[in-house]
Image 1 (cartoon, rainbow, N blue to C red):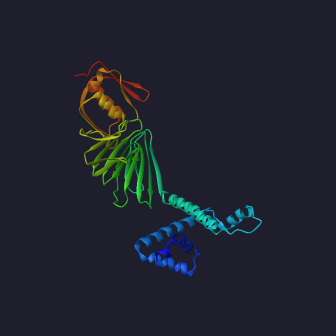
Image 2: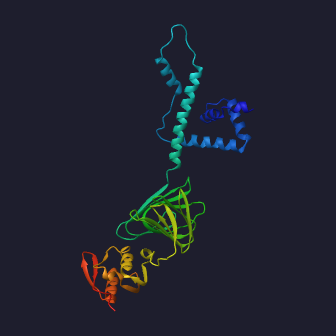
Image 3: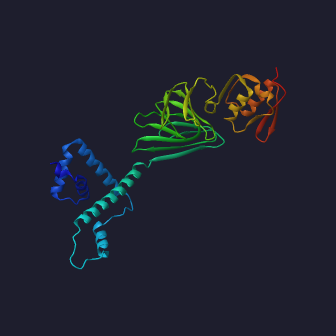
Length: 331
């Protein structure tokens, strides 16, 4: 019986193209019924064949005409004609391989074209938007993302540059994956923040609720749960957990800053990461001045006034920016 199925791929091709005889059709159907593996193989061929028919501008290869043209250009011997059954079979096999390769390529392209693609860009202001799957994305300034969903691979994929907070609408059968640089962040039902600016030496992931997988294709990385921060060091391609919790990590999303005995340089850096206008310190002396202060959705102008009043500093304006100067830290 095995002998009959030595050329089953060729028979399936004839079956699907409608060129098989009744005997050959029966042989294919009998082979497919032998096992589940055979049935799956037949269905795969059938799927590729049907998808290939949907591709526009598909070239049709007529192997008979091609061979006749080649044969007419060949030098004919004078003594006798020569039969070419072996070469004919080789040509037919080659043609089948060429067409199969073409069909496979078009099928691959079809399988990998996403149904939904959107791009979100935050330039000088923070942007909040809802993704097509219902997930929330909050982009910090100077950040961008591209979201794509493919119903055939059943995968939601985000390419991120910069910083963004995600409140993912978890769907067990539709993985939510973020790619940035060489790092992959995979949602396991959570809200989390990703900081991945191109000029930063690190990529950081902070998990607010739930759990995420944080890894590369070459390193299993970390599984992070609520309250944990993971850091990927680009230079040596290593992962680490941060023990120190930054209470202002999500300030660009919440609008809330809380500083406890924080130095002025840290305060200014955190504020500058959120507001469009920037604060600058005129000298190193005041960088170490410390404050206990909290702000909630305050205007930057008011924040600067409070800092200056508290520390006894002077404010000057340079364009849209604020410059703080002084000789000490007040009382």
